Amino acid sequence: MGSATTLPHVYSGKVRELYEAGSDQLLMVASDRVSVFDVVLPDEIPDKGRVLTGMSQYWFDRTVGIVANHVISSDPADFPDAAGDVAGRAMLVRATQPIRLECVVRGYLFGGGWKEYTARGTVGGFPVPAGLSQAERLPTPLFTPTTKAESGHDLALTATEAADLVGPDVYEAVRDRSIRLYTIGAARAAECGLVLADTKFEFGEFDGEIIVIDEMMTPDSSRYWSLDTYRVGTSPPSFDKQFVRDFMDSIGWDHEPPAPAMPAAVIDSTRVLYRDAYERLTGSSLDDWYGPAT
Image (cartoon, rainbow, N blue to C red; front, side, top):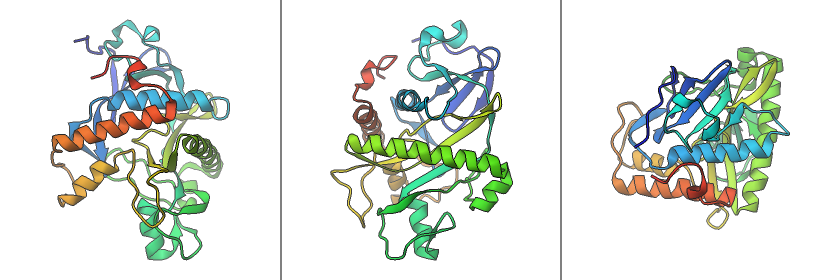
């Protein structure tokens, strides 16, 4: 058993912990916690923190020439001595001023977008052609931001509301960056036999520049489907938390804390999905990523 992190603790998120790591630097550590419907569940998913970190690093590396990001290093050799045993689950990152939006991009009609469409014929307040089916590809990817809640549920925003919240220039900057990143991610996913149905990004300001922070196109922040099982008009099996969401809905949970426990079969199956998503997209075994398998 390795040593615990003894760096000054800054913040606890639903999944990640932040620690001070020097001037304008943070150590961001991904746990194995899982959050659905904006509630952290009592059970963890083994390997999840390593998948989130490894996959984020993969995407940050692929897109850094297009949209700058906050990563300094995910190599444990570059971490402060007090970092402890966080290999594979941690990144040394630049400290930024976060932009208070969850930057959601939808490429397919599903989830909350499908519910809005069936009720009002719109997605994120944007008009969408009539006659589309569940899981159908949208004519163009849509930027549908939400609030970034410290606790509880994020709330959907119209384009006008989001621009009022962060300012028109910042809104346009994160919208354009989000759609560009989604387009890159969707193209790579297709090469790997996957559909990137939707995803969300977070941004911060560093030295006057808007950069992408937190995680990128992981199974926690995205909905991936296999092209082999994807069918329009269905709810395709996904490589993300949908398996957990479906279980929670099947037992009648009202999406309010405290959340019920998950059976071992759900935990094990979700672990397999996370690992599979990482390995299909990166072309590498998770066991080759920093740190031993858990």
